Image 1 (cartoon, helix red, strand yellow):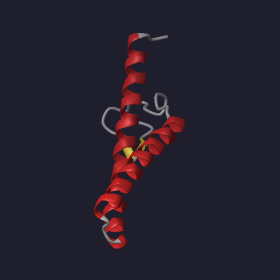
Image 2 (tube, rainbow, N blue to C red; image 1 turned 30 degrees about the vertical axis):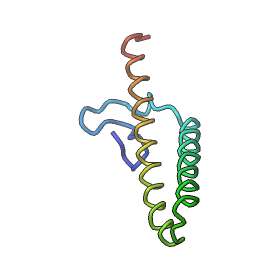
Image 3 (cartoon, one colour; image 1 turned 180 degrees about the horizontal axis):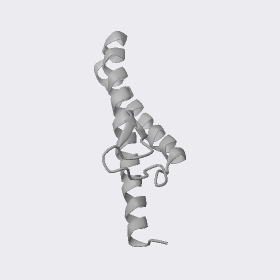
Image 4 (cartoon, helix red, strand yellow; image 1 turned 60 degrees about the vertical axis):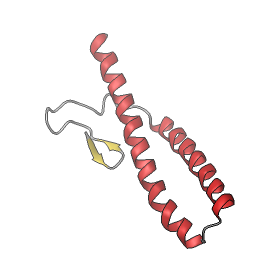
Length: 94
């Protein structure tokens, strides 16, 4: 269903379904990313004020958490939007 870590494929590789026609959410994906960034920054500030870890440990910890968190959130978000659009199309064919 995905052709890149967070990009929906245009067609399903198994059944040939046109997923590109149902994929929406390019603008909303930015909002999801921004909200996740705010949450991660608040957690990072909380850890910094509580434990005062060295900067190299912060960088080593937060870099992969941020990358995998954003990719995971976008995949979940886009899958949910795609499912809702496909389900709506199936119940109301025009």
